[in-house]
Image (cartoon, rainbow, N blue to C red):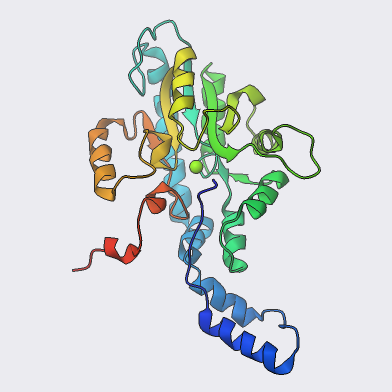
Length: 289
Ligand SMILES: [Mg+2]
């Protein structure tokens, strides 16, 4: 999550006016008016994406649709002892498991993104950690029923997340983010979960934003039958940097038969490696007619 930075075109003209006003009158800048807040929100480059995420029936219907498809395949995937997401050997004796991402896959953190829009701010680690500490994210529609169904069938759910373990002022806990995340996942209604199912970034030395080492570890102990996420990097290695959109598209096609059977992708237009792989100026990627 630490690469959620969102450059945006600030309201330079408005800022300049405020500066002139302050230097001329030597008074403090007054609180932003409702009009200014609205203007800032409209100028923020995440405005429409977060609106869609928080208000659209289209978003909710698409996540429910994806999770229903995944739920319907649980039994078939569990019972076929050769069903794996990625190539695995000697799997017939391994217990089945699912790998899920957490943010924008199980938990909806859009209030954090919306707060950034309303505050005319960019993503920052301090604000994000404050949001995580509240443990008040709601669930993505469909997610809780899916993981509860899997656990009820004896399929382990492993939560591989790029929420980062990091020290927090006033806390002696080694990974306060993990405690917060477990509390939040229980609060949304996940019935069977323990901390050893949650693998956060930086919890181990080689657990980086690249999730492949954690996937490989999971495959040593489980037959992985599905993967669910909102970022291409939740499914494949080496797709989050030094790669072009065309190269990613080629991989989407290469794994054509996985989508909706073993790979389940949730929509997230608000942040992700889809955006961070692009180089400036981003207009170069738009195709007109
Ligand atoms: Mg995610």
